[in-house]
Image 1 (cartoon, rainbow, N blue to C red):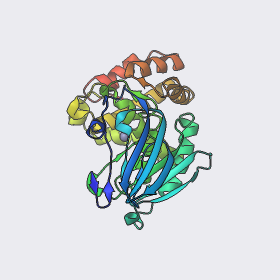
Image 2 (cartoon, protein in one colour; image 1 turned 45 degrees about the horizontal axis):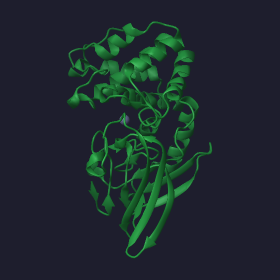
Image 3 (cartoon, helix red, strand yellow; image 1 turned 180 degrees about the vertical axis):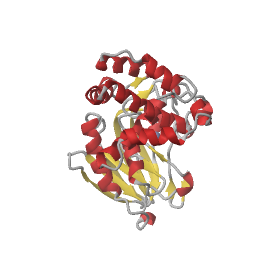
Image 4 (tube, rainbow, N blue to C red; image 1 turned 90 degrees about the vertical axis):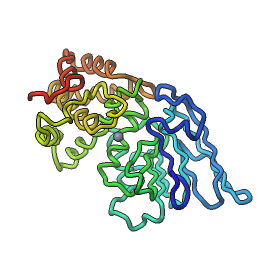
Length: 313
Ligand SMILES: [Zn+2]
């Protein structure tokens, strides 16, 4: 997407093939070297770590390297005027945050500070941070109206709130490192990233995940079309429906209440470790949840992921 000073590049689910030749499916992951030639003076931001940048003639040449496997839709080559701040999180992870200077006075969120704190927090809850760098690309593209979990540096089309940053960073584990085997497994990305927002509110003492669950459950009457979407098998036009996010997160809260906190918080890092840098599907998750908890769980997942209608509590 063209911006006032360059281009904002986000590709989910299938726009990567519009700018580089690719087998554009999340199961075909690869390491990347991305070289960008841009008009001199502009900053080009991509995945992984910055290898080099130099000016020659009227151009700026920038080389980024993503050494970990990456799905095509998580690639970016965003170009524009950016204020860049780099360093390390308190936990020691390199961080690169690029903010469009046009947004200097927009919003009150400290993107750098929140990104650092949340990356460190999720590293404790979900397992070691899977990539070489964390960060953010905050561009001035409000018409885009969304954000995306670009690998190693989520892309935001404006200054977004803390909860959005929490969501996109959770995807670094759920979606980027452990990627869906097929798009119909998308709740493994969105249900988990939404649940991470509930966990963050619980961590901050704002609201328990149980109360977030109840609020979402009670807000939607039984005859709402929300309950008709099969979260575990969405169709092309419903793969990003709110049910995939919200009912997906509800599924995880139901799982947590069934198996208890010790098993649930053992399962999350076990999942990100077992399938790190690879692909997995819903059956893999159910199998691991059963193994970690020692319980039979297919009734729970059948009800919450594969049966239309509002489940009874
Ligand atoms: Zn998401």
